[in-house]
Length: 361
Image (cartoon, rainbow, N blue to C red; front, side, top):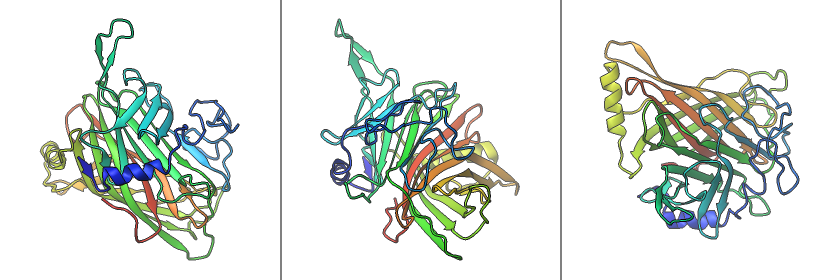
């Protein structure tokens, strides 16, 4: 099953954008050096501001920027060296146990979510000496590339996410997002911009196994004139909304209504759809390098008229283009409102564009 862009068309587009290297020559090791001599990760250097995921040290508006999920004791950020191979439409991810030989093939039955490609790890690997089959853990990855390319044919932005539903807790995984070149931010008084496009994500669970896919529509507005600049942060106001949200099981069946029913049962509510998630608006979201970070939350009103918090989390993104034409990033939302003792996490990637032809689900 596929949603939005056809698998054939998406495969052809990806083939034009990937060359088999880890996000175009950069390593994902914490202190590694890319094949072009550039440092891939922070390596202990001071980042431009607190809250940014690890990645490019000392970023500037003129350079490419890459960020990845920070490592912790829960298995987050364990995935390394994401790489797309256009010759056979596969995706390689290192660092995760029992995901085959690190090569992920195009998903079946879910091969794409809107304009983004889905890949799955191998189900079985043979014992290297006896040939006896060894069942692998279920791993899925989502890969997105910009529809815009630079002079060398490289996508201006990319993201990738990998998660597993095999553990009782979240398990091991990671995400990465990248801008290839620099950005020019608007400075004119009163200038504002609107960006829109699709999200695609993976839901996994703390306190339960299993995994699901998600889609949505993300709209972001940027006020390039206010808030006022302060302390290296340009101060531009950023608002956003995640709407039209759907959830699918790993076989592509739409289970949104089941999730909504669980929310209603647990909270005495009468929702008919998943709540929209909104960016918190305030100074300090956007810096001079085009990087955007902030909080994102959703809520609803139950049958008693009380406001109930549904999800909370963060978004991480970077703007790209000579005219601030697109934004790539990842948002992570968690909730405990669907089942007792279970936390659901949605990790969604997006590439959204400042034009009326942006792709939506």
